Length: 149
Image (cartoon, rainbow, N blue to C red; front, side, top):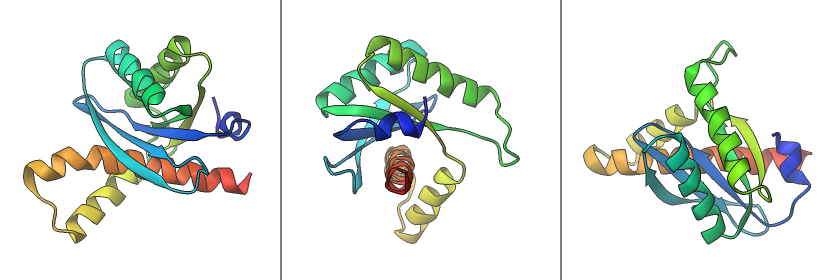
């Protein structure tokens, strides 16, 4: 489950920012140049989230999924990273044709928050878009990395 697995495929890639309350989603264009946020799916546990991610990937005609891996600033992984890894496994089990990669998501929520501050996005609207924006940043980082491989 690495970015190299996605390099071997052609087509759209979906980005996932997995969270307890909601999970943000983004998708690339077919040429894999640009990531666009497509919304959130509600929280509901690992099994339900995996099912909804697979459904969204099919709907978006994605051939690969990049799931954000919440790594601590010191490089260690905690319980949230374990849950992200488990989500990746469940998605792979449900849809074996999807290439799956985990991408270090350090600083993505901070970058999303900074952008929302700069655009003066507050309150309920902010809650609704921060996960989607984080997924978009995770995916764009992955797309940029793919260009370097």
